[in-house]
Length: 209
Image (tube, rainbow, N blue to C red; front, side, top):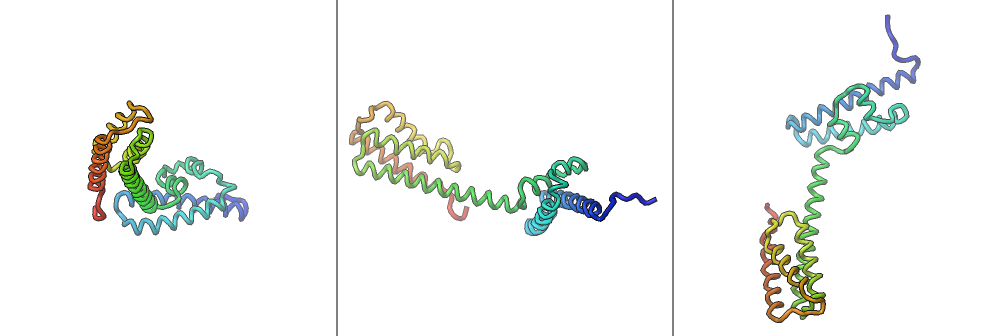
């Protein structure tokens, strides 16, 4: 005897949609595993993943009243497709797109910090040339420079510029705000800044690396 899962056309359509949602989640899980194992190329993966995500979004929108939670649907049918859930529900974009975005963000962020470091180096050296040698003038400039150098992860903790700036900041902290660097101190600080700046530029990766 044939057993019907539905009583009318609307119910049949709902179960068809459930079956399609189930198939999309399973297909995405297989695709994610194939990509991780290098079974398919990044280009093939991205094209297929974009299609599955588009189908999923359309279907999930149509089923939002009957399936308010995709995670609950996944658990109800014991699907064991966590990679697919992450891709379809959490991320919403192929892994390749995520990686490109992360790389671009990292590059952009690093470039901005490098520019900030260069600006702080030049500002500090120019200030000394303009005879701005009071502690309350020099200390903030060196603090800004030290902070920007510490943000740049490509520099090692013992980088010359970091250690020298820490030493100078510690020295200035023991002086009064209105105290001024002697001519010899100002000359030494300028030398340390210039030396650190040259080391900093040498430490930056070139375009080919």
